[in-house]
Amino acid sequence: MASAIPTDYEAEFNSLASLPAQNRSEGCATLLQQIFSGNNVEENLIAFLFFVLDGEQSIAGVNNPKEAQSLISVRPLLSSFIQNLSSCPSSDVKVAVARVALSLIQPRVVSFEEQDAQLKYLLADAHEANEEFKDSALALASINLNTSSRATDETEKAQIWVRIARCYLEEEDPVGAATNINKAKQVIHLVKSPELRVQYHLSQARILDSQRNFLDAANAYHTISYEPAVDEDDRLRSLNAAITCAVLAPAGPLRSRTLAKLYKDDRAPRVEDYGILEKIFLDRMVTAEEVSSFASKLSEHQRAKTADGNTVVERAMLDHNLLGASRMYLNISIDDLGSLLGVSGERAEQYAAQMIEQGRLRGHIDQIDRRIFFEGQNTGQKSRMGTQSLNVAGKELKKWDANVQELAEEVEKVTTLIQTQYPVSCRPASQDTESDVEKGFRPIEIPCNRLKSLA
Image (cartoon, rainbow, N blue to C red; front, side):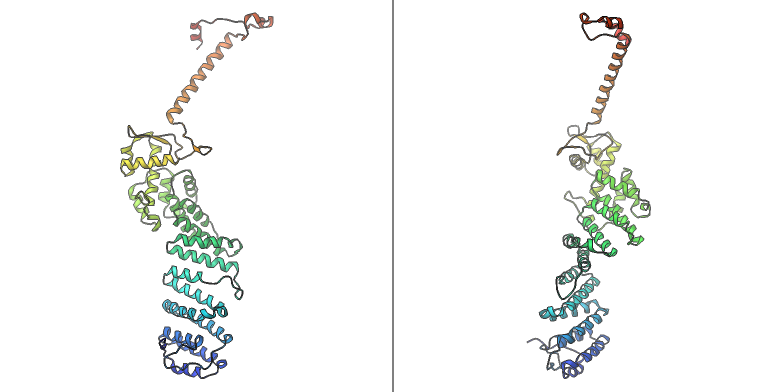
């Protein structure tokens, strides 16, 4: 047998229990106000819930009501209870009392669908106030959005799904966030609220950021930074987040275009990370101290280690500095490159080989001489024919082509001079006509010394 529920209002409850069910509502409302203004609010509110919703559960020192109240009188009383509970300053009290209320109405939830949703909203708010974001997401996810007795439009559905996604993002759970954002994607085009649409796009950007899809996240943050519904300070924060993600993105032509777009933004000099953006965009080497300072401001997932043992920002800076070295040197020894990047020669060779293989760096590695040769100024560009990546001619091959072209042009000049001074016919002499002879076309033999003087 369940133990009796304690209360400080035995006399009041006994007085209400002696009244007929139809005359009990006004007295319950008065008692509810007394409980909220008194002490031991949590246990007295729980006793009140059991008195109103569960006549079979005994309350210490209180006689059970002879008859239960009707649903018609209980619904407005429960709604008033929820409204008063929402103004309670203690989040812990809200959580404890809301859970009891939900458990009591669960057997008859069909009759209390509106109150059930209100309690779950209240419970979610209380969990968020306590920074219990996963519990808040679970409370919101349990709200029934497909019910005939309670109207739920697309805006409310999108609002719930976006809010759940934001809770999961606070818990560093991009998978759960992405699941709910994908649900919101189906109805977001019907939402007219600009604030909700901004929250949706911001959640998308944060999911891409959490999944380390930094290039798409940078573009998403940059788009949000132009939203007129966002405050100026928040727009600048979004722009700074875009710069951070662009810096962390893998080196290559797409990242270069994103960096150029951000660098040319007139607002960029006003944000915190403009200094490192400028260095990277202008292909300047980033020092270890600057990398450490930048990394100290990053989020936890942005400082996570990759498979090679480096953090995301360290890997991004290695890629950038390797591209910067390719613009400063025609070739460099592997050991010297490692010293320049602040890593071992073997690791520098590994990074360079991977970037060359992925088409983000143009060059080749001579493993015998332990030297890396960089090719051209358009490092990071990639040409394709079909599905196979083609290596663009190196600098030495370009020089060879230029010399061949120059020789061919000189030969063409000599040929033109010969034809100008000694016109010749391409036909045998036996086929020369009188007109050809009159025009001066005839087969001739030119000595070699004459060819030299013509050249």
